[in-house]
Amino acid sequence: MRVAVASDHAGFAAKESLRVHLAALGHEVVDLGCGSAESCDYPDFCIPAGEAVASGRCERGFVLGGSGNGEAIAANKVDGVRAAVVTDDFTAEMARRHNDANVASFGARVLTEERIRRLATIFMDTPFDGGRHQRRVEKIAEYERRRGSGR
Image (tube, rainbow, N blue to C red; front, side, top):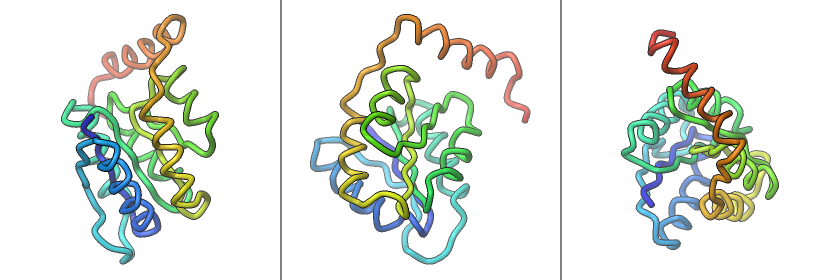
């Protein structure tokens, strides 16, 4: 699977660890930055990651920062992105099973790099259940279509 990864400075080391892990699992990783632990602004990297997923260039995405909250908010500004802040095994699984999340957001100041790698594996391996959850995801997509691209 082709996967986008992006972070700000707080998530840089965890992104690098995750990038290597995903590649070792056989995924093609598209690294959209940042490129160092020097202070930077997460929207500059997380919005392009969302765009890569929404456009179909990548099938899934991971955004990382200090808490993961701002990164998810930025990625979710892109129509077609369903970014979830993932904190444990349950949220990793349910983000996929019930919400068909296509981007996971991690807080590198909250989770260890080892934990992020584990949660990313769960996120990648878990299918969407569809069924009653499909109509909910479709309602979100319909809202995005109705309002157009103007924010």
